[in-house]
Image (cartoon, rainbow, N blue to C red; front, side):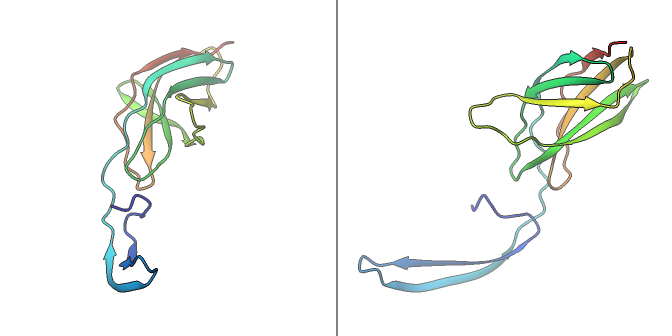
Length: 140
């Protein structure tokens, strides 16, 4: 397996041997199309609210992983029995040794209680299972 191949792309792959003297032997060449990515990212775990601000909320969680790449996070809020989109946030750059992702959710109303959840999205549009529900109340 070659981990950096993109789904749905045609690649020409060549394999050959190099002898001890540095001579390149015959190569085997094949053309392959990678399959469509249907695997969702892992859920955002250990999600919590760091702060409820006037019109935003700071969330943190363990970053999701994916077999190709996590492209971002979908922040949703509960309205009655439905979950509606609040924000699509690009995946932050992961810093080596950093085990937590922090996001600022903007566009909330002051003095309002929200039930939020986080879902990771990969480059093919697959969504993870939702995080646990996070309760946040913005300040007045």
